[in-house]
Amino acid sequence: MAIETQIMAIGRRKRAVARVILRPGKGDIKINDQTLNDYFPRETSRIIIRQPFLITNTLSELDTIVNATGGGKSGQAEAVRAGISRALIKYKPELRPVLKKAGFLTRDAREVERKKYGRKKARKRFQYSKR
Image (cartoon, rainbow, N blue to C red; front, side, top):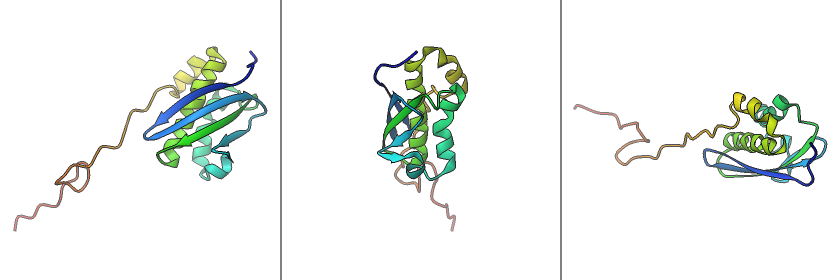
């Protein structure tokens, strides 16, 4: 199935949001107008981003343009993975079972718990001194 123009999708993780655009091409990935290697220097982040393409064998078919904001690099990488997975389903609906089984479509809802007053962190208490 050939795409006429482009496919857009959004992925989220923690505070990170990634807006993903897929276009027909040769497999280039651009994130915030930088190459994948420049924006994500860690190899693990690059592997996470390529996972949906590798599992569906579509890496060389599509160019990817991403706008990632918020959170840290790790959260952004997982948000990009979620966005790419959603866009791939719009591109080819028959890829859904493969991506679902890999767990790329499930929104990881874990967020940082807020710090409470009278405590060191969210749950950690100050050391108790009896005397």
